[in-house]
Image 1 (spheres, rainbow, N blue to C red):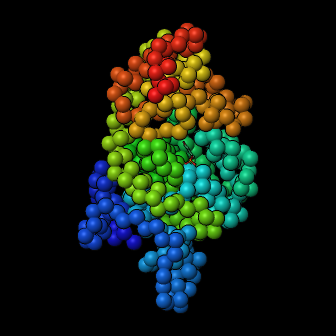
Image 2: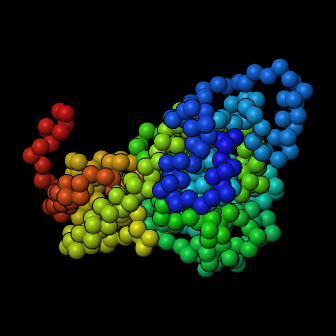
Image 3: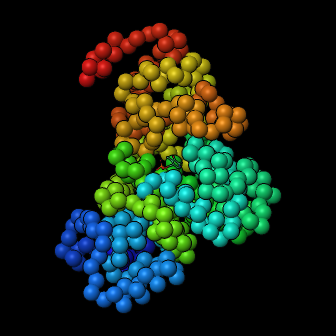
Amino acid sequence: MTGDDDARTTTRALATEAVHAGRDDLARQGLHAPPIDLSTTYPSFDSRGEAARIDAFAATGAEPDGPPVYARLGNPTVARFETALARLEGTQAAVAFASGMAALSAVLLVRAAAGLRHVVAVRPLYGCSDHLLTAGLLGSEVTWTDPAGTAAALRPDTGLVMVESPANPTLAEVDLRALAHACGSVPLLADNTFATPVLQRPAERGARLVLHSATKYLGGHGDVMAGVVACDEEFAGQLRQIRFATGGVLHPLAGYLLLRGLSTLPVRVRAASENAAELARRLAADPRVARVRYPRIGGAMIAFEVHGDPHEVIAGVRLITPAVSLGSVDSLIQHPASISHRIVDAEARRGAGVSDRLLRMSVGLEDVEDLWTDLDQALHRAAAGGDETPGHTVAVAAG
Ligand SMILES: *Cc1c(COP(=O)(O)O)cnc(C)c1O
C-alpha cells in the first residue's frame, strides 16, 4: 500500500529505515510529509468489487487492495506506521492498536478463537499484562513459570508463551533464543517495549510475535497512546480480523505521530541510554543506594532500591517527573509497587523481584549532570527520612 516493494529488496541500516520506511512512495507523489487520512468511510461505485474485497479480508485478513472500505478495516496513515515498524523489527507485517493492552488483548483473542486458551508466561510482566492473564478476563488460563520451566509448562491447548525482556519493572533479561527453542511450535510473544528494535530484534531470535506499548519509546514524547504487534503476515491477518471485529483501532493522528516518532527512535534511544548508563554507574557507587539494575543490552531504563524511604525519592524530585509510563524525551520516575504493578497480587509481585523498595526510572534526554543533581537531592531527602524540604518547593509549586 505504501509502495514499499522496491525497498524490501534492498538492505538498509536501521537508522535509514527509521526515517524512510513507510514513506517510500511519497517523493513519487510529490509529497514530503506523509498525508493524514481521516476518512472513516471510502466511496466506491462498484459494490460487486467491494463485496469481493470484504470476502478476501474475511478469508485471510490481508489488507484490502486499494483504499479500505471502512476505517475499522484499515487506515493508510496507520498503515505507514505499521510498514515502518515491521521493517525496524525485521518482520513481514505489523498491526497497530489503540494501546499496548488492546494489542495484547487481540493476540489472546486470536489464540482463544483457535481454541488455544492456555498461556505460559514468565514474571515479571507489566502490571496490567499480568492482571489480564491472571484474572482470565479474555477467557485465558495462565501458568506462571521461569524460562527454564517453559517447556514443561506447555500443554496441548497452549496458544502462547509470553515474556518481557528487559522486563518491566525489574529489567530482568531472558535469553530469547533459548526460550523460543523451548516453545517448540507454540508462538513466543516477546514484549520489546523496553529494548525497542534499536537494541534488540526478538524476531531474529525466534519470537513469532513482537509486542510494543508504542505509548512509550516508539511515540517517544508522552503524547500518543498506542500498541503494535510485529509478526508474520499469517498472524497479522488474524490480528487484523480481530481488530476489525472488536474495534481497538489506532487513530490516524496517532499513526502520524508514531511514524514521526520512529524517525528519531535510534537517536533518542542511544542518547537516553548513554545518560542511563552513567546514572546507573553513579547510583551503584552511592552508599544511599542498596541495589541497581541496568540491562546488559543497555537502554534508558534503570531500576534501583534505596536504603531510605522510596516514597521520599518520589516526593523529592524536582526536574525528573514523578509519573508512571516511560520512554519520553523527559525523565520519569515511579514506585512500581504503588503504581505500575499495584494491580498485581502483593506476594506474586514480590516473588517476581518487585520489592516494595524498588524505584523505576525512565531516563530522558536532559543533561546528565542536571539529572544527577536532581537524583542526588532526592536521595538526600530519602536518606534524611523526608524531613528536608528543598528550598525551591514553593517556587516550583507556584510555577
Ligand atoms: C505500558 C506497557 C504496556 C501496556 O501498554 P499501554 O500502551 O499502556 O496499553 C505493555 N507492556 C509494557 C512492557 C509496558 O511498559
